[in-house]
Length: 179
Image (cartoon, rainbow, N blue to C red; front, side, top):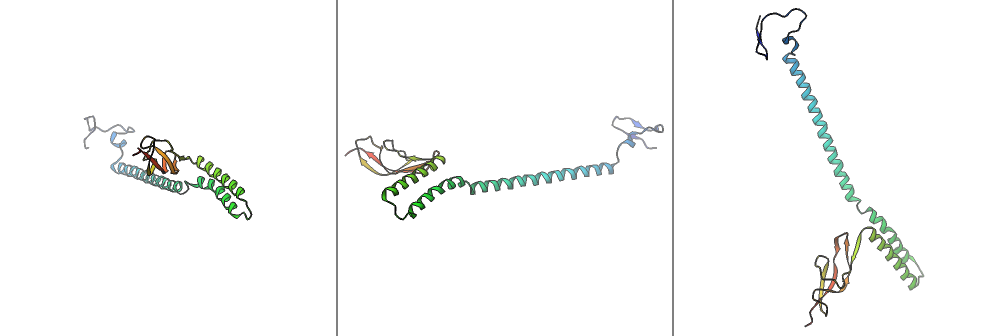
């Protein structure tokens, strides 16, 4: 009989009594261990592939959502503008409208578009009497004035901001000292 040395350093040489398992009999064979390890490797590989596929699906879904958000970002704003367009078309379609009724229609249309702008957080930049700010104003000319230099004395065209971002700077005339 061959002696085997186990983890405790003791050599085993005497046979065990019948009915009692030896350590060698209770330990799985190398083939069984290899088969179990291969199954575990396969399970881990399958789990990894599923996780990778799920991550790819999440990434693709996020890209689709972002593209959709960009594509339809103005949907609410555009739907708010439709009644304004309808009012302008109705004014043009009127056959026998007086100048006064046309003026009232334009005023109502301006109120509609002002409401749309307020809902969309679009504000006017009307800087009369303010110090010239090159981030919000565009100087078109300078004029001699009794005002301190670099003050906005005339607005040639209003500017607009979306929240705090300038959509269009105000076109202004800026004061300069008299000669």
